[in-house]
Image (tube, rainbow, N blue to C red; front, side, top):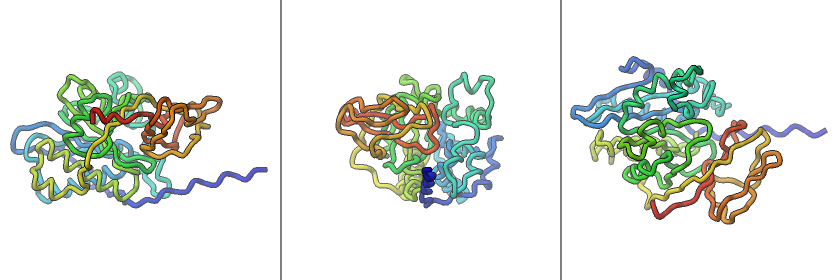
Length: 329
């Protein structure tokens, strides 16, 4: 009789989840959403944290900025909305079992198509998305703050539109930018409406700040938030310089995703060691197996984007495959 498999070791939790209950009562009529107006006309920008309830670096960044607001900071122009998104999942975050609190009923970042938001289906995440939708649809620019399950350098998910990669180059961080093919499980917030339309002037980016609970992820989140406010003209150069935390990269590189490897069953497994943004040199290298099906790398120098099997369910994305496109970065 075989002995049971050893339990997977818990990740190291270096970050402390902030107590955000004090930010419940904003000024918008929607819990955990705050609206700040500048003295001069300008863009409407939206910053969102906790789209996934266990990605706490974004909560740390918004908690930090709202403390700045209490100390007297205000945007110079335009309108800024700050939203803690999946607060119900976040309330369930447990450092001793940190993965399940990603969501309660379903992934909040797969529900942003009109046919879902305005359809008959119901879940706790859908109810929250319906509350947040007016703020998102009103935004000229949007920053969605995330983190990753496995160790990986920070990267900027620019949706499917090159305009968002160009916007990220103006932002200056992080080093790696990502253009992908969308998510097979549903529309993400950064692709909703004009954000995903190449002809629209609206921009949306999603920053993956590093591994979920590493200390550096909080610095990346605050740094990206500060630079975003500066780029949009809501903060002056002196405030930005005083509050940035991460040096600008020497250059930025663009990865274009060509396909996603989607699990077919709970038996999915990788056949080689994987690391975020790792490069597999040779086309045809066996990458993963699920039952009788084996995935192989489709081309030389194949980049592995956000590989991971924590909480992976059939139909979930195990890894995206891409290649560096330095000609456009």
